[in-house]
Image 1 (tube, rainbow, N blue to C red):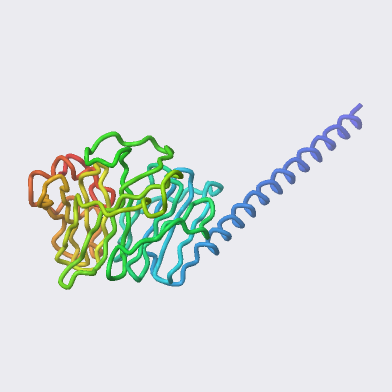
Image 2 (cartoon, helix red, strand yellow):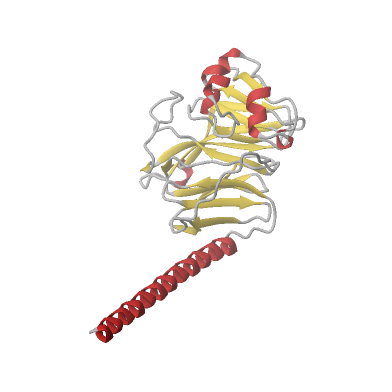
Amino acid sequence: MLFEEEIVKRIENENEQEQDLAFQEEIANLRKQEEDIDKQIAESADHRDVVHDIALHPQLMLLTGDSDVTVSLLDVSHSYKSIPVPLQFKLSPHSQPKKMSYDLGCILQGDSQGKVIVYTITDPKKMMFEFDAHLDSIWSTDESAQRTDKLLGAQLPQSGDKLDETRTVSASSDAYHGQIVHIWWICRKQQISIDEMWHIDNSAQLTVRNKFANATYLQSDSLIAVSTNTGHVIMYDTRHTRHVELGRVAESSIRERIPSQIATTNKITNNQTQQVGYNAKCVWVRSREKI
C-alpha cells in the first residue's frame, strides 16, 4: 500500500514538473514574440536623422517624419509593453507630440521645398495630391479637430471618427525676419476634381518674429499655438481680423527646462489665456489651477 502511494506521489510530482516546464516555455515564447515585435518596430522606425514630427492614429498607428526625408508609418497595436513616464525629462529642440483625434484616411507631409504632399493611408506610396505652400522648408503641419470648416471652437469629433475634410496648419521659415503660418482646407471627396481638393484658408496667415517654429491647433479650432526656437510658445486667436496674440509661455529656452518648472515658474502675459491654456496640445501645462 505504501509502495502504491509513493508511486502516485512520484507521478504527481512529475506532472507538476512537466506543467512548470510547459509554463516556462510558454513565458519564454511570449517574451521572444515581444522582443521580435519590438525589434521590428525599432528597425522600421530607424530614422537616420532628427525626428521632427510624430502623430498617433486612433487605431494605434504611429506616423513619424524626420530630416532624412523619410516618413514612417508603423502599426503599434501589437505592442502591449508599458513604459513608465519619468518624473523629470528634457525635450529635444524640435519635438512635437500630437494625437490624431479622427481618421481622415490620409497622411499630410511637408517637404524641404515648401510643398505639402497628401498620401492615402491605405497605400502610403500612392500620392493623392500636392501643392506649393511655402517658399522654404516646412517645419510643422497639424490637422484641426473640428467637424466643420468653421472657426467655432466646438463640435469636436469622437475618437476614431472618419471625416472627408479638415483644416490644416503649416509652418515654415519663409519670411525674411520670421516665420509664416498658413491655414489650408483639404478634403478627399470622390465627386470633386483634384484641383478642388485643397485651397488656402484666408482666415489666418500669421507672421511670427522667430525662425524654425512649430505650429499646432489647440482643441478649440480657432486657437493656434506656435513654438519658436527662442523658447516661446505663442498663442493666437484667429477669430479676430488682426489675429490677436493672446500670450507667451516661457522666457528662456524650453529645451533647457523640465515641464513642471515651466508650468510653475512662468506666467502667461495676458489674462485671456487663462481660459484656453489647458487646451494646448504642445504647451507644457499640468494643472488647470496653475493657469
